[in-house]
Amino acid sequence: MAGRPKGTPKTGGRRPGIPNKVTADIKAIAQQYGKRAIQRLVQIMENDEAPHAAQVAASRELLNRGYGQSQQSTDITNSDGSLSHPGYAVIPEQAEGMEAWTQQTQSSSQIQTDE
Image (tube, rainbow, N blue to C red):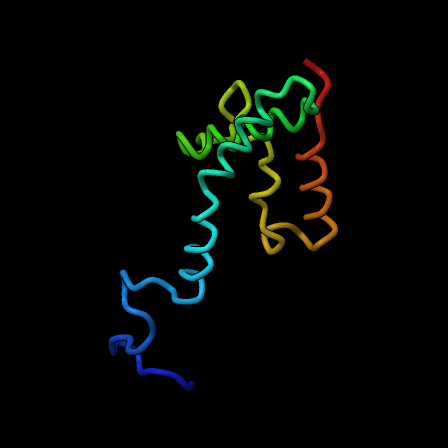
């Protein structure tokens, strides 16, 4: 196998804390327009004649810049605590052939309307 031997430290490359020269130049240019861009977002957000979608998008961008993006979580459990899609945990080798595995995953991922 080519490359460095196992257990030896990595060498070369950019050291931690050193900015990437290519993106640093672009970032510096873009930051010149930061204040104007925020002012434009405020104008769009406050313009009652602007499309609703544009107002919402501008508001979202301002909130994300000021407070950071909100955390999103996904609940994959049913009300009884079981997983919503337990079929995803089935490994093909555990089923008796690929056909059985396909049936298991399809039956466990169907939406049940009986409540």
